[in-house]
Length: 187
Ligand code: ATP
Ligand code: MG
Image (cartoon, rainbow, N blue to C red; front, side, top):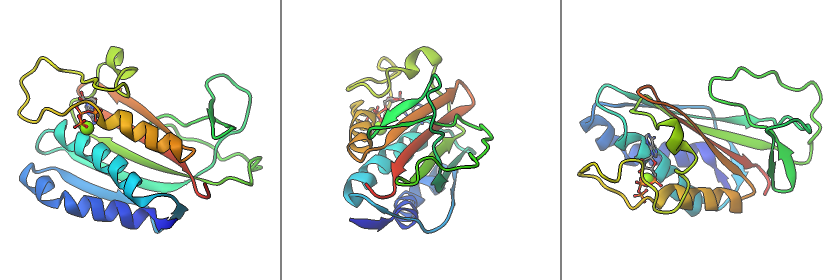
């Protein structure tokens, strides 16, 4: 079903508005109206979890930045590429300034990228590869008043992949975490 991704993200951020205010965290949304073919309920669940996670792991005075934009995959046979929806894409990393390929080899499929970036506690490198596993939580032992089940990211990954997309994470301990969600516009 066609839906406006920007509208959806704006609505989710508005739903979290009180939490942002209470915790004195700044929420920002960059990008413009962008229509894609997707199940808006499922994508809502994905982004509610990603933004909810960012809020949980960011202390007061911090910032959560959500950006949305078109994205062009680099189609190549280089190492590090990801196979997505039968197509090979190589994702950009956090803060990576990319050059757009002169020629779009993949005219059939256009992509959007949504990034959720927080200035929170970050995730230790050794834990990063596990965070999409079911029931995995980085600090199970610590007594958190807001303990989740550890299912959110596993479900998010499943939904994104069911849409022919891909979800990635980068993080630096003590600095913050950066999730990227890649989605085909016409799935
Ligand atoms: P649930 O989402 O099921 O309520 P949860 O939030 O603990 O529980 P996930 O959303 O799957 O589970 O996240 C898994 C773990 O990844 C979290 O417990 C946390 O340790 C870590 N994590 C996720 N997002 C962030 C983030 N933005 N900053 C720091 N750690 C994070
Ligand atoms: Mg969660």
